[in-house]
Length: 193
Image 1 (spheres, rainbow, N blue to C red):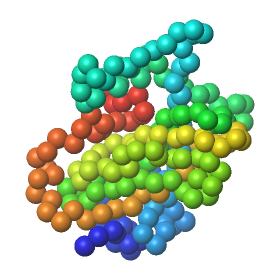
Image 2: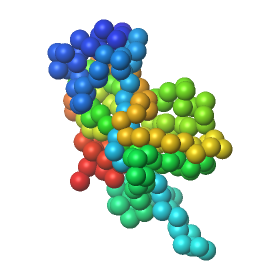
Image 3: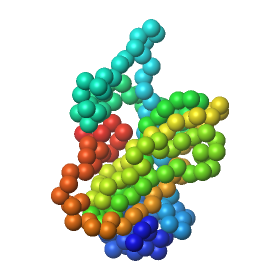
């Protein structure tokens, strides 16, 4: 097997195997992908007070034991839109953003999220790491966005920001019994609760 085609994605959505809410429109489909859209919330890390430093000592505990949810609630701030609903991404700045779509996968389908080349050519990386959502995953993906370019980039919630591709898992039996991870069922970049 391999990557699902446009027709296969549409069939799995129609059958209810894959759930995307809100559902994709006809113009969101590519030959083997579905466009996804920027959600309503974009966050950036708060800048420490002048002269202060915040250290995250991952060597003291495994990274999986570090509570990103707790740390995020303390140090992330939401980037407010202007009066026209525009959010400006400054050069050389890192952001976390929610996708508009909530996705539920069956135990035989995994998913990848990736950016659009038109944004990448402006210096905007839409997803830096971990593009893989495991079979059986459910939630709203958080994008790891970085504006590497020299220009401000203006965005609005609802605009196309990336795309999802879907993959068949050849032996899906274990997916139903293995815990997926700390971001399963998340609704925002701040976590699920």
